[in-house]
Image (cartoon, rainbow, N blue to C red; front, side):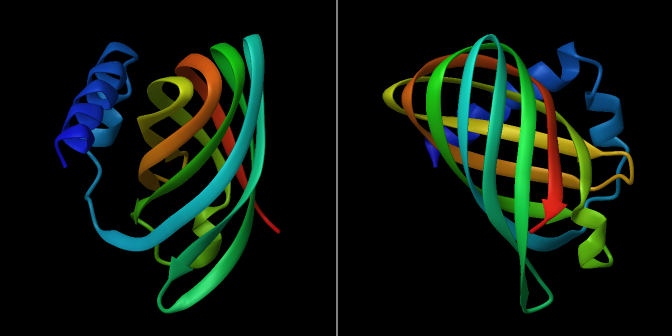
Length: 147
């Protein structure tokens, strides 16, 4: 629990520094679903990520594809994430491109917090376990698509 609180503070600090905090703070926060996914990521300065996941929304599971680009990424990592989804009324609203704010370091294993927001106002708050050898500032985009 203590690690999650620390990661949340890191993510919020990054969001404030990047100017995303006002957008996150002004949104009405209605938890509506749960998201899990697994992503592989590689990078040397610029990183690429890909993976699969599942949105659980109103008792149904929706399979997803996840692709992304990161700035300030070095290494090869695998990430397993789980978290809450806010501000969706229909499952399709999860699809789209998200601005990403996160921070993490993995030397064999590590934990990171991730905050995502798309143009529809959907917000995803994740906690992730990262394995491999890598470091990232986590500034980038993540696209969620139907599988």
